[in-house]
Amino acid sequence: MRGEEICWADAGEIVEAVRGGKLTATQVVTAILKRIDKYDGVLRAFVTVCADEALAAARAADSRRPKGEVLGPLDGVPVSIKDIILTKGVRTTAGSKLQADYVPDVDAIVVERLKAAGAIVIGKTTTPEYCHKTVTTSPLTGETRNPWDLDRTPGGSSGGSAVALAAGMGPISIGTDGGGSIRLPAALCGIVGFKPTAGVVPQWPTIPGWDLLGHTGPMARSVSDIRLVMNCISGPDTRDPDSLIRPHDETDKPLRVAWTRSLDQLEPETDVAEALEEVVAAARDCVGHVDEVRLNWSDPDQQFRVIVLSDLHSAFGHRLETEDREIMDPTLIQMLEFARSLSGSDLARALRWRRSFSARILTWFRDFDILIVPTAPVSAFPLGMIGPRVIAGKKTSPHAWFGWTWPFNATGQPALSLPFIRDNRLPVGVQIVGRPWADSIVIAFAEKLEKRLRSNRRPELAALAS
Image 1 (cartoon, helix red, strand yellow):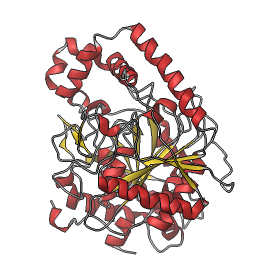
Image 2 (tube, helix red, strand yellow; image 1 turned 90 degrees about the vertical axis):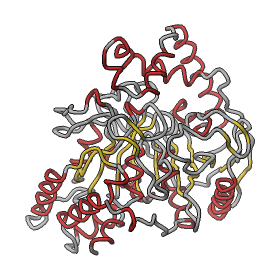
Image 3 (cartoon, rainbow, N blue to C red; image 1 turned 90 degrees about the horizontal axis):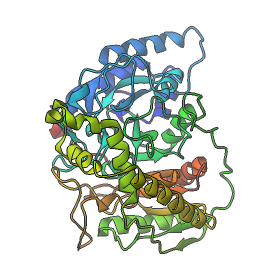
């Protein structure tokens, strides 16, 4: 395995090659760093590249094997970290000029666990300022571009992570998801993104502005790598009182699977609908029968938005009264200005709505183990847009395009975006949703689908060399 092959290898393949002496961690890290240097000037997936630190960690990993030391489950595997997650000794900007030079003195729990498993942090990936929108552009880093089409968005807010994986700049990245921020860019960039059950992956320090809805989870090019990483980062930690014991689900029992093409009258574009039908056909091959259902999980009073805005304002609203606002993203300022009008009573009503909304969805899941829905109703749309204003021929809000992802942040359920890639089309994503704590069931089912659907097609990057 050399150069290009290393860059497209799954984490599991790298682990096997390093343990078997066919590769060194230094060779792996060097190959990934060269690729970042070659392509990232155009794509802008990374805020910070930890070249010296990563090479030092790789040499340390290589010294363990000849000594007979126990190797971790991710030994020698390069990982990137979304730049909202704290990394000790490596700046964490959150996509904001306000903390462009902030260097934490602690690692987030998820980073601690990755390092303990032998993973090598290779860099920090781009995010919109404080993760406030579902496209990846910020005053600090500019536009992050989709490697499948440079004039289109990768989505967000974990857009840099998705781009890095889609472009072969590492096999694993860690993102965060407060309304679809792992799954949406995974869909638009043709990779796998997993939002675990709330609490399965501890969050400490907490993500400012996302205490109420945020999840941390893995992104990869294969479902098997999602499983590998989840085994390393799941489980309780006393620093996060909401963290949970790792779920142990039965993955061999007969599954009751349902699917829907529309949600509250939101229909997908043709390419997404066709992908969904192929995934459902593959699901029938796996389980024998899949029920088509109609769902109406709407939020007409926009209570979910009240929760998001209240949380963001509690963390950053004070910035509006200072000169800081001069260097903040205008769309973030607009959100914070609107949030000024919200009261504690508004938030209390929204939290009561969340409770009843979750009860309604989870009651529906008594009859099914898995729901298959589009991750997004569209493929990647042009840069400069917050979201499409027309979907499947109907005028809509630019925020409507994440209508299939936010419900599962409200409920805290596990949800995985599985890529669907076909010739001459942009990637789209199909979402596999399970009951709370059924993370391993979702992953196991997605693995079965992936075996039937996985494409070897990659973005054409030769012309992108920076």
